Image 1: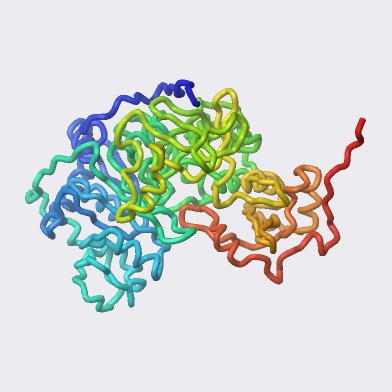
Image 2: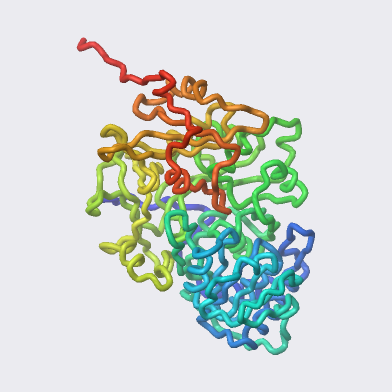
Length: 545
């Protein structure tokens, strides 16, 4: 049983926050009164808002929503990229006492229809370019579309369509609403890579806690570069971190590999919404420049921690922390600053209880992989459940613990190490292996920009290891040469049999590789097979003495 105390952070107090500390409207009110002319946010299009302007726009949109029947506890759906309109929608909904349900901008067809239906929203705030995708879909309870820009469609969808000006109501008509720490500010959909997306019910406490643990090193003088989408917990928590401390935000639609450091310099961003997974790989492969360290970025949440990512931090001159989070929880694992534990995702933080368990929820020995399950000392810091999905909620909450679906291992010092998503683990000839460990080795090849490792099924219930790889700009990946590169670096049973080379790997808008799509396609005619090529891997036979 885990009895070790949680890691204490200089920037995080686990005492449950009051409404004035965590409710978005209360925080915006505070900073609009204390520092009305201070810049709060700069958008990608160059538009800027002070704290006073942010409050005014939130009040206008709240009044507009209230005039259309939105009340405390309701849900407002939004389908738009990171933009002034989407931020207005979020803060306006919260001022009206409602939750915003931002929908993934890549959703189409039945996946989109499912998300709209799940919210039960009567109002959908939508980017004009997305309206065409609604044709032929059931809009469920939706009564009106509120556009975020000039209309580009004359489709008759059977609901009212209101211009962008409708989002700016009469602020004087706004009726104040009292919101509580346990109320829901946002409903975030899971990525939907393995089936219909689940709608995660958050709370103000949960989002505040996630922000303060993950980005609590941020202060009122910092600027947070946010290039993760606001329909993702990373985008929401990064903005929440700035609101919580009175800092500022530079909001961009997406991560731009080629311009990342130019954007950091142009916006004078001192912190950012995280360099995670493939994002670090992209930056590591960028050619060095003489001015690499000439940038204002001072500290980053970085994952994974490897020799390469630590070299990235040294090259560009920033400190780092690492951690673990998912939409349903509030950063249960976090590291100290510049902790050099290879591939660790941190330690259990103060206020959390974490265990590593087997399929029967029995704790496994240190060093053995198992599912990470968590519970919190404080209420409302883990999801209330999945909206309209009691079965999924019950499946996640078993025996008093929230089950993350992630396989980890824990060492004797209390460091946790991510092994794999349970659904992504590969089993080959009796050996269980981590797709992440395979991917790290593959991405060490100088021509590989990103990689996905996954199992392809064989008759008899076994699997073979397959990798899909994309090259760095201007490079060509030779599958045979790649396998030869891996042979001395990998355990024999982890060496991939199949190699698929693609210009780009399929991804969600949050830059997660869609392994479910790759697995579904399996071994294609263009897939390289090392056994057919005569590259056989054998376990080294050792003598008896």
